[in-house]
Length: 165
Ligand code: FEO
Image (cartoon, rainbow, N blue to C red; front, side, top):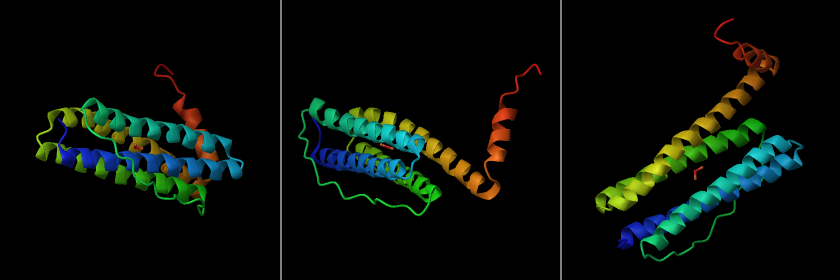
């Protein structure tokens, strides 16, 4: 049986994941408006992933015989000063979510909830990937600002070299 403390913490995380979805959908709309459909698509897929994260927590509460209690989702921002600023926010947000997941894990440890600890390990791994993906995009946008796009094209060409060349 799910403890009340664990249930409350997971219900809070459902809201956090849905806020992530809302934030990325808002960014996706921003980039569509700026005629960057590739950026918009990446963020729209991210929006869908975040809804999947929320549903994983939602289903977990139901599987454990608990009670889902949905909370209000805050309004996300809708404007960013630059492409880099938007993706810096993605990275900062993912770092924040990582801290929230780690806190949830600490709650599961304190509650001696072994099933929740096992479920949360998926999210701990997922956050490594989420931060890595966001960091790579931030680093590339920083490179473009500092050195233009030619260096990225050259890097792409050099990266195609096979081991036997
Ligand atoms: Fe649900 Fe982007 O972490």
